[in-house]
Length: 156
Image (cartoon, rainbow, N blue to C red; front, side):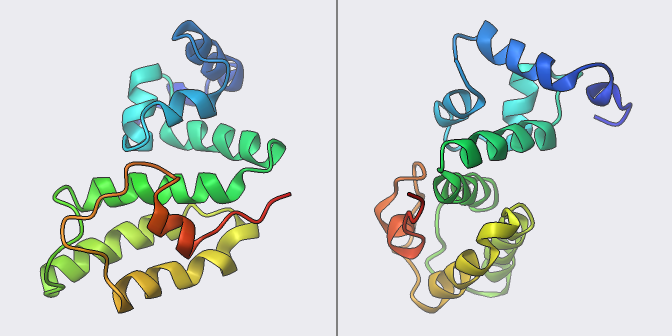
């Protein structure tokens, strides 16, 4: 969206109203029902002309902090970025083209990580590159076994 309509009015109320209209009681429930969809795709589903992905993510972070599920949110966002950048899954060979795709996914992800989790998340990309998952690996959600190993829950 380039015309700024998503920021007009009470966008937070509009966001939650759209989620409730679709039968969900939270942004988290809505997003987790679509664990591989990008933030842009989720926002377009809620309101193609007046909801932005960054608004949705802001709400997801707020809910994750409240429910002490930030690490799970961070893993979930990595899933979304991997699906967006690696549509065929983890590459069998990290040639220049595939290295760029992996770096893009990790870079987009690290740009969204809440500050509280930046240090914990930083080694995840290094670990994935140093010890690549099997070719074709595509995590299906934030509870993926490998992702839970690399970024375990710590919230109490």
